[in-house]
Length: 247
Image (cartoon, rainbow, N blue to C red):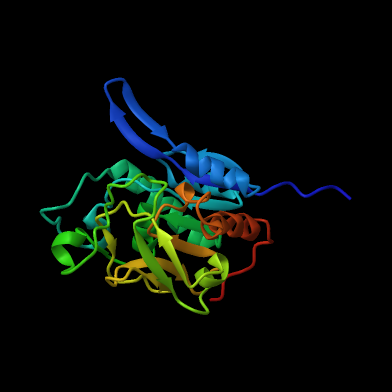
């Protein structure tokens, strides 16, 4: 019997404009985490054409939406807040388009930090544009500690898909964001929270695997096995046959 090929996991590129032109890239920990979980990591840069991005999604079995800059509030019908950080229309076009295609086709998807926010916005949700000024009493969600260190705890909803994946009701996470999910998108639910109430995890109700986490598990896989399980679960879901979404 022929051995089944390992699932191909697309990883959306991050963007940087420099003196020598644009650079589309992915930080190595994402690639290492996917490969360690048994997936074949491939990078998805912008194609500036939804049809070409759709063709790219046809060639992957799963998707990671990576971290990065702020999501443009115009994407969810808000005016910019005074503390809004850098936004990048080309980056938003890539991530939001690919996220919507993945959700429509039920491609397993894991959103990380900005990627969770993109997943929520792509499905119709909104964001806090700046936690410190919009959430009284909020924790410091932009830690000064190294990325491989945790800075606060997260409580995971019992019985949720995220709880089953992590095999943990509480875990310590790192934190590098000043935006967060405000209104959860239709068809999604919040399944993890920080002690200050900030949403740290969301998941699609009808999708076979559509998870978002607000922390950076790719930097914590050596600290706690729960973080690695996110990538292992994505790869496992990507290896399963596609099923039709309910109407």
